[in-house]
Length: 117
Image 1 (cartoon, rainbow, N blue to C red):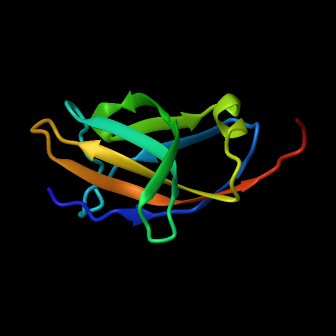
Image 2 (image 1 turned 120 degrees about the horizontal axis):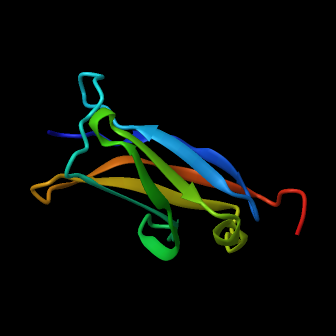
């Protein structure tokens, strides 16, 4: 299975929880059966030349329905408090049972200050 990563940007309020529900789909548009797969996701800063710089957080992962490809990923308010840049990058990686790894989705998190401290 070859996966071409999708791109999606989000606005994130510092000091707030930020949950997402993802449904993993193949190139044919059908849900992927994630039995035996592992999902990982990170938030990081990037150098001007596009390399990863500082890792800010790992998203928590909850497999809602492996057979239909549904996964919840989330950042906590404690994690987003540390987001002290206006823009951070994230990506979500899918590891197949045979160990092959694919970037599934990536993008920019635009950080705003939110309403309280």
